[in-house]
Image 1 (cartoon, rainbow, N blue to C red):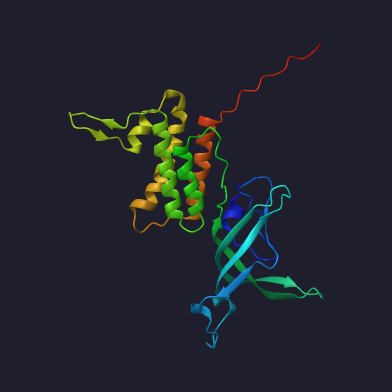
Image 2 (cartoon, rainbow, N blue to C red):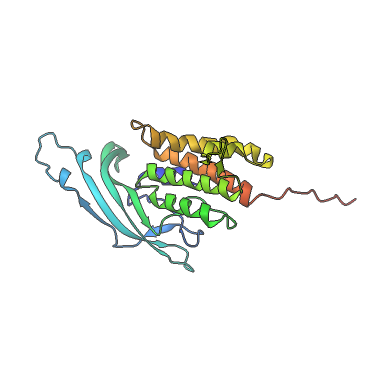
Amino acid sequence: MDRHVLKHSFTLRRTHDWMCPTCGKAPLRIREDSFVKEEQSSSRDHSDEEWQPEWIRYVYSCMLVCSNVQCKEVVASSGTGSVDWHVEEDMNGVPQQVHEDHFRPKFFQPHLQIFQIPEACPCSVAKPLENSFALFFAAPDAAIASVHTAMKALLGEMMLPRFVAPSGERRSINLHQSIALLDPKYAHLKDVILAIKWLADDGSQDEGVSVSIDDVMDAYELTEKILEEVYAPKLPTTLMPMTP
């Protein structure tokens, strides 16, 4: 997972290497002549004496094509844009301020595979994660909520009890209680799953707290670690005997 690619804006001179969601082997490239940008109504009036290019706000759309000639998957993307400036030297080596359009994606169809879900991962866990990937750029709070759903499904797949009846009254077990019941061989993952729960809870319970892209990426990294250990454990390497 490349945090820079997922988090930062791109320009038409410097696009990101978004990996193809279909083959996963090559980056997507903006198809020539498909990129369209339009300035939003809120910034079209440039008559203010103090107007600056940085006030401009865009929406954009484009088509992306996989650079793997054996794949050539087509992906639609749309998002927002603005104008920023940086300093470049002219032909005489004199620094000058240069304005450039910057864009941030909000939508990909088909969505990007933010990280690789193991093939052995059951659909009940994989599906919420796929939903999360689709929501990642546009709605981080919804994206992290889907990760929380995936963690509950994961614990269910581990055949943990879903209900308790301490006083004869049947009650559902919450995620925190389920984590405490994990098999001892997965005891080292308890804190990792709890960390994901806390990240999700911060965005869903505190009205004044908004979930950031970084929060979601943190949850993804933790989730990837858990799924690898549960569904794609690495076999221990054995040393080959040395020949005399």
